[in-house]
Image 1: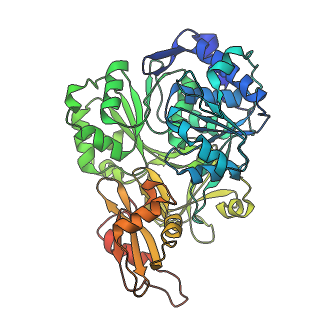
Image 2: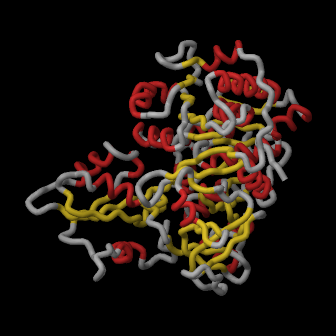
Length: 522
């Protein structure tokens, strides 16, 4: 079966063309208006050189224009390369060059980056301004003006196993890897997840989580499938989110637990009308019982779900149902520590070192296959081969299934830290730290954090006779990596624990912080 990501827009043009499709601030756009802008943007992209399968990037905060970018690129036959808004200019330039992205769209928040990105990127040829201003920054094209004159481009109808996007995720080598996902993968995962957490016909979706993230984009694709109105909030800010919920009567949103905590702790939370909310999906880490208790009391009519997945699976691969969150049954309540059950369309197993499935209750590596699984990493054949074993995608997470098919994650095979819903790879932070002249050796691990789930912690050995403070090292890291990746805390030691073969024993560094926890991840 060949799925096509633009089909949701065509369907709404047949069913309800004048219904509201998007809301951003005071701007409301119908499906008919959205389709016209998408077709014209596709024509603009083709006019500046986009051909079938070409990657087109966007560096922007959440807005209705982001959906236009997604659909416009697919409509014109291209593939997405959504730029991480939390990265440095150097990291963004790397993601452009790695998959030969020649066209970049920017909003007002990142228009000032254009000059630096041009100087850093070898592949970038054209920058298109998608902001709200009447005048485009120097050296860029004005999307709005070009679209006014562009004849609507017919949908080229790309779909199936054609490339839909290259989505960059961190790697243990310290460099991001481009995950290649097809139309079938993205749309298939969305349809299967709607079988787990359905959108009603009158659902109003609040897009708060960053759309460049797979999780945030999945929300929009599901809204397209079901023809739901979507309300966009540029970036997470409790008053902005609460005001949008009250004003637009939002019924569904996706947030990470740290966002939920900030929302519920906001001093004026109770003054906003949040009674329209029906469902909240959270991910990035499990929810602690104290926070859940606060949420259940403050939002008594909301069903909560947890999603666990990877960029490489095109969205969530397990769902923890709402029943586990409000149940007084001890067995179901204990499953709050799980990641839920495998979603429709995905087969999951727990395997030993040789790839053989292990019995229920036995810890091993979590693997998956089925709808949503990536085609591979862009131009990285070895990493792609290493990611698969016998047709199964290796997650790098360690866990076990209980007798009812609930998946419990207990540790990570890879050195990844999940802090506030963001993936941080220790090797990348270690590479940045090691550039400081005072550092003789370092190791970066994730340690428990009530606020972030996990926080980045650095263990540092200084060169003899040299000194450095935690603040100095943190500032040093910011020169090379995004701020959220920089260590929050530091520990200075005389030496790091090594095995007889000279291998760093990170489990010894982690053990004191996690020994009283059920899970060795946040």
